[in-house]
Length: 120
Image 1 (cartoon, rainbow, N blue to C red):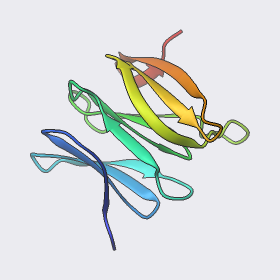
Image 2: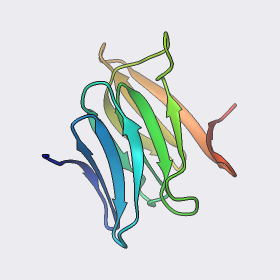
Image 3: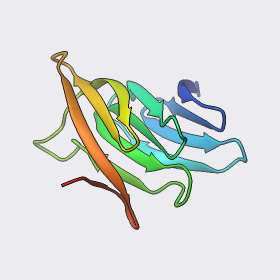
């Protein structure tokens, strides 16, 4: 199988093989970021290496430090799926995503004990 790199930082790599994405730490730990309909399109790793995001059919955000591998999904439920083509970090726990229509949308989230949850 061919592995494609989506994002890299000093200590982490986000890759995918076909429709399956994963994150691998420099110390050998790895976690699944899930299956995507169609290959994942884009990923980013937080500037402080606290979380990563991978997108295409929706968005998955995953912890990198404490709680490594705990993930939350956004825009992936039937009737709510968004096709995401680009990501950019806008804050410690915030990003913007661009949909197929070229419009940028904001998403703020915060660390929670059980994973990441949308900020209310």
